[in-house]
Length: 309
Ligand SMILES: NC(=O)c1ccc[n+]([C@@H]2O[C@H](COP(=O)([O-])OP(=O)(O)OC[C@H]3O[C@@H](n4cnc5c(N)ncnc54)[C@H](OP(=O)(O)O)[C@@H]3O)[C@@H](O)[C@H]2O)c1
Image 1: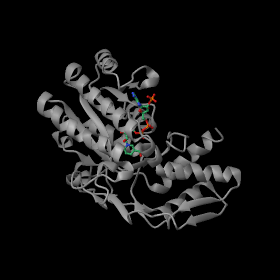
Image 2: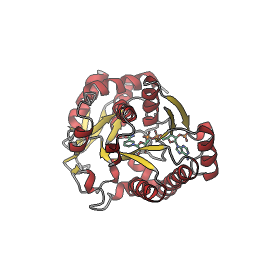
Image 3: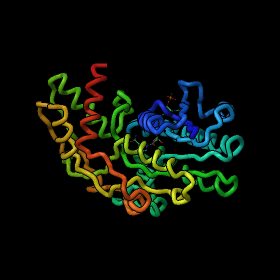
């Protein structure tokens, strides 16, 4: 299949490209460094016309840490909405038979939920700390429905928990939560420094290895015409791990010998936040997720390979 991966050099995108090539798809990649700025409708139209893919996987976004999406809130909402509307307009005008596959980050769900069920997406407000980015992720589901209604564009929407794994940005303001933790421990190990962790370490969160996200996409492509994919679904395990237990795994993987100081004055947030897995288990009953210990080992090894940078 001819697959165009938007944002294919990014954290999620690189794992997707690797998995698609392994599955022998014909893959092309596009982002600004290749000459496609998705905030330009003209460029997006021209690129889609030239490439003519059967499938577009959208891993392009302006995204970063909580700090990043707050400090640059207006830019985050503006840029991401323009990218998304351009992608859909270009699909409708130039590639009406192509299928769009897109991850929707779980920060789109209401902030007060502790179990993310697909049907609860609109049941409350987005947490203010991720309002700019989360709102654009919710809009992805609106665009998907509206372009299906008017133009018959098919979108496959994957609600996706926090990802971790190799290939994230080395910039601490861009790296994602568990990756940032791996990076800090590896750096502290190199510098023989102590680390400070926030809160009590008790909150439980769900994590997805980026390679597993990519394997879900190749599994979808294996049976692309199956209409069961058309209902947005969680890549969910309904399982998580406390921050303290995660940190223990990272420390063991990095053979870190320094001290860990917990700053218990910092807030913990909700005690538990996980993705419901009922629909996912129906759709892909035999899918085996990478164990956290294994994925963290790979991630720490990757940070070892890029530091000092
Ligand atoms: N990482 C996670 O934990 C996570 C969890 C759930 C869902 N997701 C979703 O996965 C997707 C990708 O996230 P990520 O973490 O992989 O982000 P990332 O590492 O920052 O990659 C984003 C990619 O988008 C490209 N891009 C940015 N602005 C662009 C523009 N104007 N035109 C064209 N390309 C542009 C960037 O490449 P250039 O700089 O070359 O343009 C980059 O390759 C997002 O939808 C995100 O919500 C991620």
